[in-house]
Length: 243
Image (cartoon, rainbow, N blue to C red; front, side, top):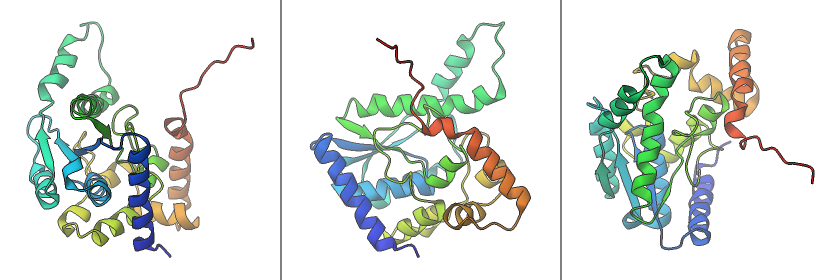
C-alpha cells in the first residue's frame, strides 16, 4: 500500500519548503554513517536542493570498520564532505570526569552520539547549514535513539516513515543496494539494531502499520519500549506559572 514515488516526491517538496522558510540559501548538513538512514536522508536532500547544497560529515570514533560505506555514499551522491574523528573528544570528556564518579554503561554508550551531534552543529554553524535529523518512525517508536544525540536536528524528513519504507525510498532514489540493505549496527555498542531490540524491523514495521503481530511476547516488549520512551518524542516539560 506504500506509494514510494508519491511519498518521495512529497518528502522532497517538504524539504524544499522547509528551506524556503528557514534559510533559502542554507545547506543541509547530515552525519554520514554509511547506514540506510543517513544515506537516504542525504539522497533526499540532494534531490530537493541539489548536491552543491548538501554537506556530509563522517564522524568515526577511532577506527570505523565500515567507513568505506560512508565514503561510498558521499562519492555516489557527489557531495562535499568532511571527516572529523571524535575519539579525542570522547576520551577527553571521560578523562575529565571526577575520579569518584563512575560513568554508567548507558552514559558511555550514548556519549559518542551526543558528541557527534555537537560536531554536526559546529560544522553546520560554520557552513550556513541546517542539521538533518536521520531518525525513522520504527526507531523512534521504541526509543532506539539517543536524546540530544542522533534524535536532535533542525528538520526531520523520515520520522514518519518506517524502516521498510525508508529502504523503498532508497531504492527508488537509486542508492547502491549495499547501503540500503546493509545490516543496521548502532555504531555505539557494536551490536546490530535487531540484536539490541530483540525483534526484527520487519516485525516492528508490520505491527506499526497494521497492528498485526504473531508473538504476544514480542508485542508486549514493543509496547513496553514504546511507552517507556515516549518522552523522547515530546517537548521538554515546562513549568508555566499562573500569573
